[in-house]
Amino acid sequence: MERVAIYIKANPGSGEFSIEEKNKWTGRIKVNLSEPPKKNMANKELLSRFSEILNADVSLKRGAKSNKKVLLVKGLTKEEVGERLEKHEGNC
Image (cartoon, rainbow, N blue to C red):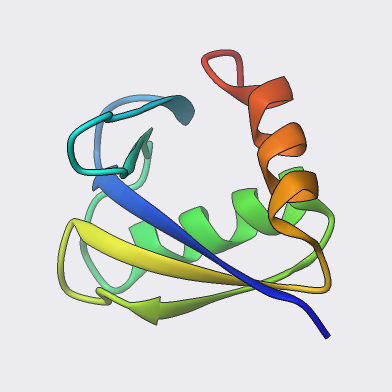
């Protein structure tokens, strides 16, 4: 089974959910989250939204208490993940 890592820079409590383009220097995708970083709410929103967008099993591999996170996607290729994220970038 394929596994793909997605490197995220989360911005919790930013009003509404959106996916922005990848930072060319850090390789991280900026993700604005509507939920605050309290009681794991932002992490839950991040996992729920990415699972829905990718239609795949998504888990938090690293960064539970940081804005720098690594998501692990199971069952998709790197190309499939890229295509699905491009469709949602900037307009979630």
